[in-house]
Length: 357
Image (cartoon, rainbow, N blue to C red; front, side, top):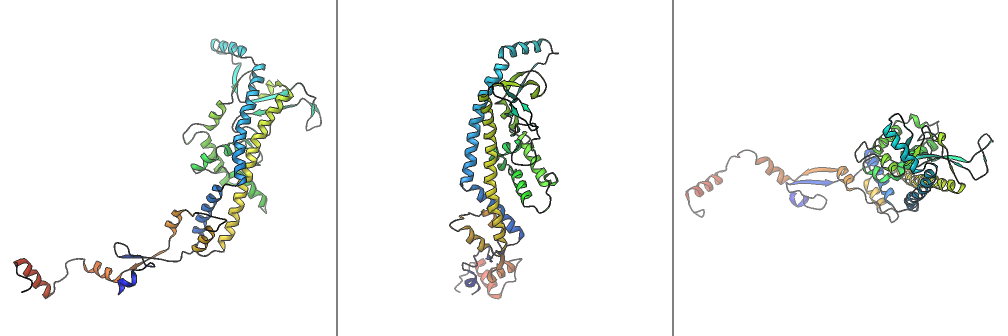
């Protein structure tokens, strides 16, 4: 009777007679957290207009940077002829006190065929700007810090955007600056990125990886190798202002704009992802059972395939012991006392006596 009761879909019988009764899974803080993380992955996997714009901007940026660098090479080598560079390199080898030639990826260009422009003090100055072809170079044409004020227009965010998939694959957060900006926007109190330990840790970990700290070589150096030219002279970029035409200057500005577009589209995409996840956090607070989450996930507009590992880890199961199997498992321990009938049967078998007699 007990076996018939337990042998049904609600109580699947294991091969050892132990039954697993699947209960209605109730949500708690840990389960909700795991589901929110998985939903974030789902949102990032969706093919949206924002995501497509981001991916396209990266392709466009690489093409624009290559084109701008080709123009840069012409301008720099016009100012520092390769013959002169070779001569100075030869002298450097002969006299180790000479150090006149180097390689660089950032340049200060000054327009020579256009009217002067007004600077921030309303003074007339030459049209000039700093252009960095480095992976984490300034996106504003200045000499500010790599992070600047924490806004989206900084060099590190371009690096994060270009290597986003690789960074995510090793557990890093290339979206950390965007998330920090969003947190600052909604904060009721004065928010300081410098006092955010999570953001600081993310930035440190990201920088360590980009430097090649986890193997695979430095992304900074490999990127720079593709955009490096010989220059003559020491000191900072401003000490060797390189003359160029207004048209050439415009091509360099296109490079800056293309890099900024990568950062901007990355930001817009992640903003939509974070907004969806934030809304889901509110929705899941009102859910008490996992079945409600499953119903939401299967909705035509959602189509979220919940990570099976969450189910395996979070399934609420009660152990239910089959009475027959429990009795067998207990009484089979040791050597139970034989009954009179069992003794007679054993004697007949041992002496070859017919069991029918």
